[in-house]
Length: 84
Image 1: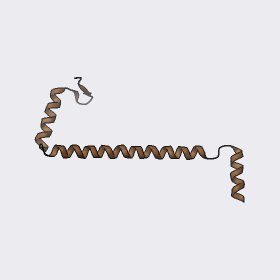
Image 2: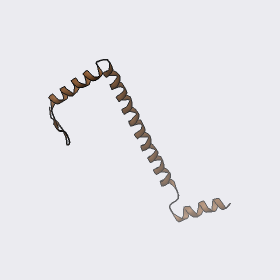
Image 3: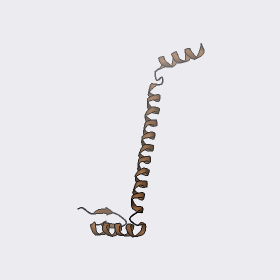
Image 4: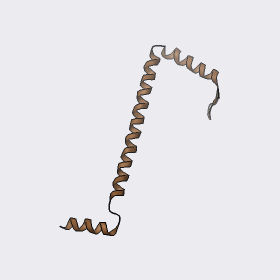
């Protein structure tokens, strides 16, 4: 197993992960951990949904901008329609 490198903390190896897990179990207890993980999962799901919504909004705006008149001929036709 490769160690995870975090700049301010140094190298976190497998024994450090075991200690972190034990501290979490001691702090929250075995019954609270599934609730915490469920809440974390829901939060991540909502975050991804929000990111997808923003990405879809950007795509819609881009499509709207690309569909607008860009050539003088189209601009003239649009202006003619507005004047009528």
